[in-house]
Image (tube, rainbow, N blue to C red):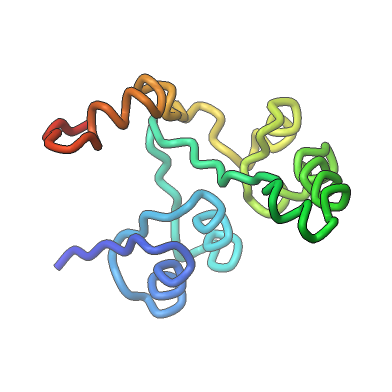
Length: 140
Protein backbone atom coordinates (compact mmCIF):
# COMPACT_ATOMS: atom_id res chain seq x y z
CA UNK A 1 0.00 0.00 0.00
CA UNK A 2 1.32 3.40 -1.01
CA UNK A 3 0.02 6.24 1.13
CA UNK A 4 0.34 10.01 0.87
CA UNK A 5 -0.01 12.69 3.54
CA UNK A 6 -0.95 16.24 2.54
CA UNK A 7 -1.62 18.36 5.68
CA UNK A 8 1.23 20.64 6.72
CA UNK A 9 2.49 20.22 10.29
CA UNK A 10 0.23 17.30 11.27
CA UNK A 11 1.21 15.38 8.17
CA UNK A 12 4.89 16.05 8.72
CA UNK A 13 4.68 14.83 12.31
CA UNK A 14 2.80 11.68 11.29
CA UNK A 15 5.26 10.96 8.50
CA UNK A 16 8.57 11.87 10.12
CA UNK A 17 8.06 11.13 13.80
CA UNK A 18 5.54 8.30 13.60
CA UNK A 19 6.88 6.76 10.36
CA UNK A 20 3.38 6.71 8.80
CA UNK A 21 3.20 6.84 5.02
CA UNK A 22 5.54 6.36 2.13
CA UNK A 23 5.65 9.86 0.62
CA UNK A 24 5.15 13.28 2.18
CA UNK A 25 4.05 16.19 0.01
CA UNK A 26 5.04 19.14 2.16
CA UNK A 27 5.71 22.84 2.26
CA UNK A 28 9.33 23.49 1.41
CA UNK A 29 10.21 24.61 4.94
CA UNK A 30 8.61 21.48 6.43
CA UNK A 31 10.74 19.28 4.18
CA UNK A 32 13.95 21.08 5.13
CA UNK A 33 13.10 20.94 8.85
CA UNK A 34 12.55 17.19 8.52
CA UNK A 35 15.95 16.74 6.89
CA UNK A 36 17.54 18.88 9.60
CA UNK A 37 16.00 16.75 12.34
CA UNK A 38 16.46 13.38 10.59
CA UNK A 39 19.36 13.83 8.15
CA UNK A 40 19.93 10.14 7.47
CA UNK A 41 16.30 9.07 7.19
CA UNK A 42 14.81 11.14 4.37
CA UNK A 43 15.60 12.85 1.11
CA UNK A 44 13.93 15.75 -0.64
CA UNK A 45 12.82 15.27 -4.22
CA UNK A 46 12.23 18.70 -5.74
CA UNK A 47 9.90 18.94 -8.72
CA UNK A 48 10.97 20.97 -11.74
CA UNK A 49 7.83 23.09 -11.41
CA UNK A 50 5.92 24.14 -8.32
CA UNK A 51 3.51 26.81 -7.13
CA UNK A 52 4.93 29.86 -5.40
CA UNK A 53 2.73 30.14 -2.32
CA UNK A 54 3.22 33.34 -0.37
CA UNK A 55 0.83 34.03 2.49
CA UNK A 56 -0.82 37.42 2.20
CA UNK A 57 -0.32 40.07 4.82
CA UNK A 58 -2.24 43.32 4.99
CA UNK A 59 -3.20 46.19 7.20
CA UNK A 60 -6.95 46.13 7.75
CA UNK A 61 -8.01 49.77 7.83
CA UNK A 62 -11.14 49.31 9.96
CA UNK A 63 -9.23 47.35 12.59
CA UNK A 64 -6.12 49.53 12.90
CA UNK A 65 -8.19 52.71 12.87
CA UNK A 66 -10.55 51.39 15.56
CA UNK A 67 -7.67 50.21 17.77
CA UNK A 68 -5.25 53.04 17.01
CA UNK A 69 -2.55 50.60 15.89
CA UNK A 70 -1.88 51.76 12.34
CA UNK A 71 1.67 52.93 13.06
CA UNK A 72 2.64 49.69 14.82
CA UNK A 73 0.99 47.57 12.12
CA UNK A 74 2.77 49.52 9.37
CA UNK A 75 6.13 49.15 11.10
CA UNK A 76 5.56 45.41 11.55
CA UNK A 77 4.58 44.98 7.91
CA UNK A 78 7.66 46.90 6.77
CA UNK A 79 9.85 44.78 9.05
CA UNK A 80 8.51 41.59 7.45
CA UNK A 81 10.15 42.61 4.18
CA UNK A 82 13.36 44.03 5.65
CA UNK A 83 16.71 42.46 4.80
CA UNK A 84 17.08 41.33 8.42
CA UNK A 85 13.78 39.45 8.39
CA UNK A 86 14.43 37.98 4.95
CA UNK A 87 17.64 36.47 6.32
CA UNK A 88 15.84 35.11 9.40
CA UNK A 89 13.26 33.56 7.07
CA UNK A 90 15.98 31.92 4.98
CA UNK A 91 17.70 30.57 8.10
CA UNK A 92 14.38 28.95 9.05
CA UNK A 93 13.83 27.41 5.61
CA UNK A 94 11.31 29.94 4.32
CA UNK A 95 12.24 31.08 0.82
CA UNK A 96 13.15 34.80 0.94
CA UNK A 97 11.24 36.95 -1.55
CA UNK A 98 14.18 39.33 -1.99
CA UNK A 99 16.18 37.83 -4.91
CA UNK A 100 19.55 39.06 -3.58
CA UNK A 101 18.95 37.51 -0.16
CA UNK A 102 17.55 34.35 -1.73
CA UNK A 103 20.86 34.07 -3.58
CA UNK A 104 22.62 34.00 -0.19
CA UNK A 105 20.72 30.74 0.42
CA UNK A 106 21.46 29.15 -2.96
CA UNK A 107 22.97 26.13 -1.21
CA UNK A 108 19.77 25.62 0.77
CA UNK A 109 17.06 26.19 -1.82
CA UNK A 110 16.83 24.75 -5.30
CA UNK A 111 16.89 27.92 -7.39
CA UNK A 112 16.18 26.03 -10.61
CA UNK A 113 12.57 25.23 -9.70
CA UNK A 114 10.10 26.92 -12.04
CA UNK A 115 7.82 28.65 -9.52
CA UNK A 116 4.51 29.53 -11.12
CA UNK A 117 1.99 32.05 -9.83
CA UNK A 118 -1.61 32.86 -10.65
CA UNK A 119 -0.28 35.22 -13.31
CA UNK A 120 0.90 32.19 -15.27
CA UNK A 121 -2.77 31.23 -15.58
CA UNK A 122 -4.01 34.62 -16.71
CA UNK A 123 -4.54 36.19 -13.28
CA UNK A 124 -7.32 35.82 -10.73
CA UNK A 125 -10.05 37.24 -12.98
CA UNK A 126 -9.27 34.75 -15.75
CA UNK A 127 -8.98 31.84 -13.30
CA UNK A 128 -12.30 32.80 -11.72
CA UNK A 129 -14.01 32.98 -15.11
CA UNK A 130 -12.48 29.74 -16.38
CA UNK A 131 -12.67 27.53 -13.31
CA UNK A 132 -15.11 28.93 -10.77
CA UNK A 133 -18.00 30.56 -12.61
CA UNK A 134 -21.28 28.68 -12.09
CA UNK A 135 -21.57 25.84 -14.57
CA UNK A 136 -17.87 25.73 -15.54
CA UNK A 137 -16.37 22.28 -15.90
CA UNK A 138 -12.91 23.29 -17.12
CA UNK A 139 -9.88 22.04 -15.27
CA UNK A 140 -6.26 23.16 -15.20
